[in-house]
Length: 400
Ligand SMILES: *Cc1c(COP(=O)(O)O)cnc(C)c1O
Image 1 (cartoon, rainbow, N blue to C red):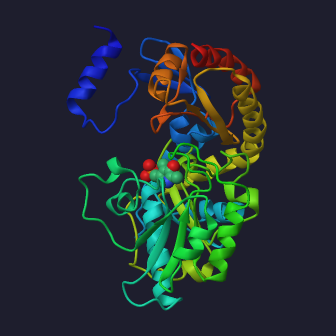
Image 2 (cartoon, rainbow, N blue to C red):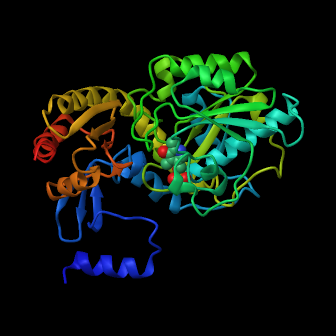
Image 3 (tube, helix red, strand yellow):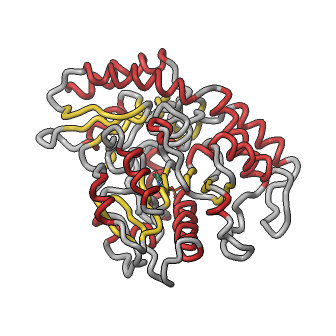
């Protein structure tokens, strides 16, 4: 049995089967490249769902980790540490918001945003006790906790996991008038992804964010942007809301904030909203720990100093243009923003999965999202030469 087969067999025996990975066992990574245990090299076009925007094992991130683990790694929030403030200051400066509340995973940050919006609703908007409503979009993806899957429109995400938290209202995505109609006196927030990445790289029409933001303003409803996947340059701007000049009331970030090394997430907001949290209201043992803060700070510095948003825009435009030029009987549509690109496979062809399996054989790793969409999301450090390496291989598989 090959080393790959052996490891997969052992893993499958001892791991819950809540994933169906491609049959490749990775053991090394650098930049956009990863290697499997057999020594084969692959181009990572998934970037761990955009958590590795800076590329694998970025030297500045490795240096930050090494320095920090030689000092202190975990303090809990029972005490101050000398890293968290510096990290949050930089995060607030680049997001142009007053305060941040650090967490670990994306789902925790979404939960934190929900708590902030509800408490703001009761304290500031004077919504009656336990009546707060948050409006969400169909086809959303905000994480996997029970509250969050409770307002998912994906049957599988919910099936078998009820009963669910009340207080969420679903409206169609990309439809500002639906938001207008759904708002009541109890509405405290509108939670939205600027591009629905997991939902199949669904890019709303131009002006959607601005228009829904203004509807929120007019009705004293918080505009809550989930930029966990779209943030930090993925769509060609530092934040995807920057495309329309929108400044969210609550901004949710995660994934590449941890630079591919460690889970680091946060919500950012204005003082008048963040002030609803009092000592004891919310917390997490690991959130804001000095190792996470050192990594988050280094991840942000790489993002800003290497101008990853600009590279994402330039490389994204080039890559998407070339993908659009591929003449394949299987492609229904190529769409995206920056380096978040979806290729929708016609339902008359195969599903997206076999295309991903064939691309693996060609040395390119990616993952389908929903049945028919192949998502291309390389690290934002990607070069033109690396894209040119991948293009003929992608073309070959998509035209077979
Ligand atoms: C990945 C993701 C989440 C959840 O993040 P986890 O770290 O997996 O909990 C939430 N929202 C969006 C838009 C995401 O892409």
